[in-house]
Length: 252
Image (tube, rainbow, N blue to C red; front, top):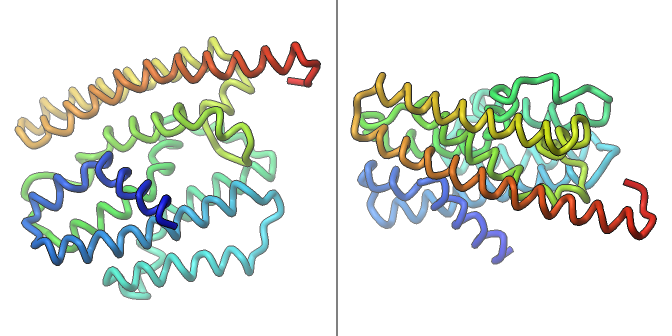
């Protein structure tokens, strides 16, 4: 559990939560208490995700148990029970996408914008709760301002986890694309999508005309650059594994 907690704290830094805490002028005590509760919620979402990735046959009773834990964590963060479904809506959609892998529904039919919008369900939920705790953050950023950043960081997650996800039941878009179209087209599609994200963020810079959105845009541009480099590294490692399997007579 300590390893997972450390991983989540690193994730929160990556998602720029510290920046929001600072803008929200949260006291250290309130910030620490909030972050502890957010970590618990993120853990519960991870446990649900791990169950979906590890079991082809899903048990409704077990799924309900995972959701009970998520809802309890939401309650600890001040979300009323009547609002559980509202706050969980994007995670329900993400879960539906994972379940569709078992029903032969083609996730590649979904646009990359749509797919990654819902795959970033957890960070959007946690950020929404941070805004609830400190509404003054809205003076600087709307929740929608983080869309491009969330898209590119979720792309980065799929690219980084390509090899790891070969061993799980996982809606990794890069893996699905390589399986369907091959490495060359998958790479081209991902590079194009990353360029689209950066362009969308550039357009928002012009729309917002705000030094605060400039902060997000700089992070988007850097993430696009880093993820493009990581994409080639992950594909190279993937090809190396597949070549080794072929040489050993393992079916690819």
